Length: 379
Image 1: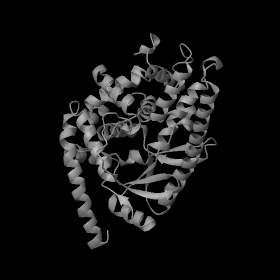
Image 2 (image 1 turned 135 degrees about the vertical axis):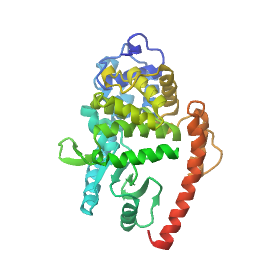
Image 3 (image 1 turned 180 degrees about the vertical axis):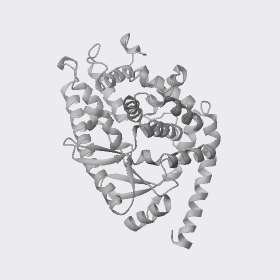
Image 4 (image 1 turned 120 degrees about the vertical axis):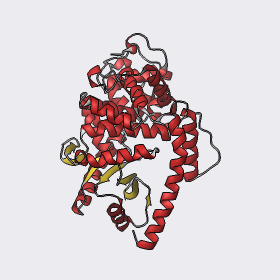
């Protein structure tokens, strides 16, 4: 077990990480009280990493002498209360959307988000939610036809459609779980998902304080691969923050080290061996995950690189100081950020730097051809 934080806490980032360790039950008090300025900095980091609620769960465990000053504490409580209300709203929305799809003949499961939150245990309501992602069995044809019937003209891509079904949040209707830029690895992953479709449809969980909201979710075995791939995808596309990494910590904690050999085989096929070794180091260094729950040997070199990316970029890399504003708008701005980001990490992941331009061109052509197919054939 790597526990560097027993020895010395130097930077404000160290103090923020220590707070995360308190939130998940590995520590109980801070080694020393933070100054008002340090609390302001920790709050700013928590906001950039979208873990304000989780950090409040840690603060509530602290003795009063170690808590932030009242004006910061109450602002923290206000933000966390909004997070809790939003979680209640999304919990109900997940159930309602899934029921609607099921009633129309689709087999479905909720990906990531509210389904992952169930692994958080007593701090589930403090997890800051994003969008709702729901997967439907049967492929793109039927799913997109139904989505267009339900919502009219919608944005869609190779993986999902974006549905304006609920207020204040986007619903992503997935016919594919994820896509990889490398065509061979993408082909392998789509085949693997198809072969393991039962793992997407076999489990239900209860949400909410009363436990009266039921949704379908992937199995923990499936999530041990999928959530890692989701992290990898976002690291290659724009960046990842502590919220996404903490999700995977709870996946690994609940997976308890099951099926390591099969996991390693699939991760290697997907080209994530190096990345996964870095993730395991972060799991030990930041989250103090027990060795028995690790899925492969950690790499300190890869882990330190990954931790730097997480801290500097924040949630989805939005705060990465290396990304320059080149005056573009909309989709072109996002693609510009993606290309700049891949170039920045290209020395670490050269294959992604090679395949990302191919993927962007492929997807643009695919979208044009699929659009023509809809025009001429109606779907």
